[in-house]
Length: 251
Image (cartoon, rainbow, N blue to C red):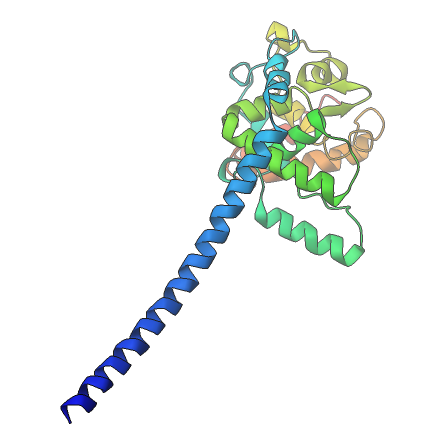
């Protein structure tokens, strides 16, 4: 009887031990997978964004046309963030929500029409990659964006983006765009109005299509969306929105 009791206890202990080991497997395997994924991203990002790429980005700040964020009204960067990447300050270089939505659209249309690119990814693409729409290029863009977010602050990334983005008609960066569209010299501390900021923020999606010089009606519609987004995200008031809508220099 005593021997039988001991055997039962040993059997229960063995079962509990097996259950415990199974539980640990469910914790350990995902943890190892996440660790491996993190190491891959870190190593790949470090290889893709090396000293040459960092030097190229740092050199941007030495160009005569470069305008620091501190020289711009707050609503200028806010206009671009609102329309291009409203979760910019909350993601790590890629936006899973935007990417998932874009992937669903791409699968339905069997195309790469929806990029899902964050501001950081756009900076990477414009500075280091080609414009082709392939999965390989997109993967490289994401890995490099993650690394850029580790190397630079959000303000630095946004500043570099604003100084390099294409605005149409052969112009790159805010300085050239302000000169072309409004005859203003930002390096001489001319200031952009809220309306002008909305006009410029309407361009990156399709500069030639939304150009106020070529298609003023399309640009006006896109401007309205920018201002609506800015109000929606709390960057401007309803009154500022209405005022900007009625003060377009392009009209």
